[in-house]
Image (cartoon, rainbow, N blue to C red; front, side):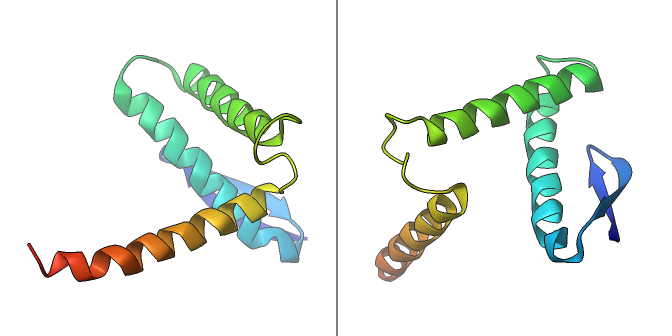
Length: 103
């Protein structure tokens, strides 16, 4: 087991994980931090516990919509979806880069 220190909304947490899961856990913590900070910064939800619940509900809803049996991505894992999105971003970047010199 390996110890991993992460920060979520300014609060430090020491987590335990398998050595080969360190990167995934670190990315998950960063993702959660981003979600929670966005909710906090919107100013509509007060209190860290409520912000955490709202973030968890948002993440759960995203996950369930991706894994819905009737959804367009139902046959893909979340990692495969992320890879497809990254590939689309690369295509868009390469298509738009020449456009930058026009403006």
